[in-house]
Image 1 (cartoon, rainbow, N blue to C red):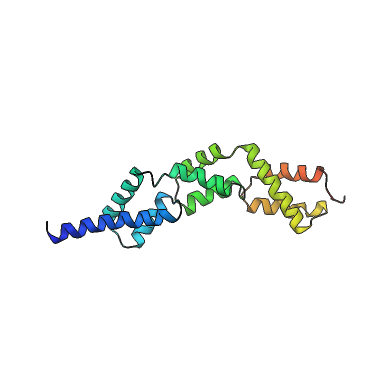
Image 2 (spheres, one colour):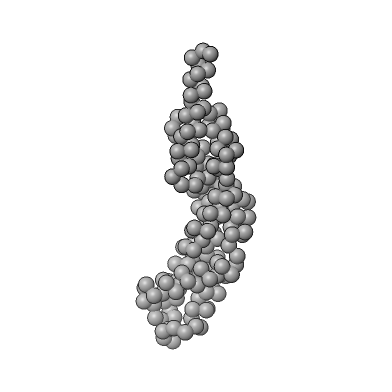
Length: 166
């Protein structure tokens, strides 16, 4: 075997090893692994082979990644923010992100999380007047909850037992 073939083989093994090392610390999307390997200077063929091999072993699985991401971050974010993070930051295809979020997070679960988030915010900011509920709505919007969900939660909070002055 000549030196070039040995070098290419070492680079392929090195790319796979770098991918596995990167994946060992935390689950990653395919795009995150690809970007990391390119950043380390590996060639396209080496990167593609390393990713294919990692997928073959089950180390990279974007569907499972979406489900785990939603399970972990779903308590703090609404659907819009989850989708944004998965698509824009993690490189997950939009349709895969949408289906994964829909499978992992029901409307009832999202509403319960929005209500819990609103109540925590109200307690932390000591909000006692109805006129200040707009701040709660804005906070929920920044967290990625849909407008209809926010309105429903604010109505529940305003009508429920609480210290709101009229």
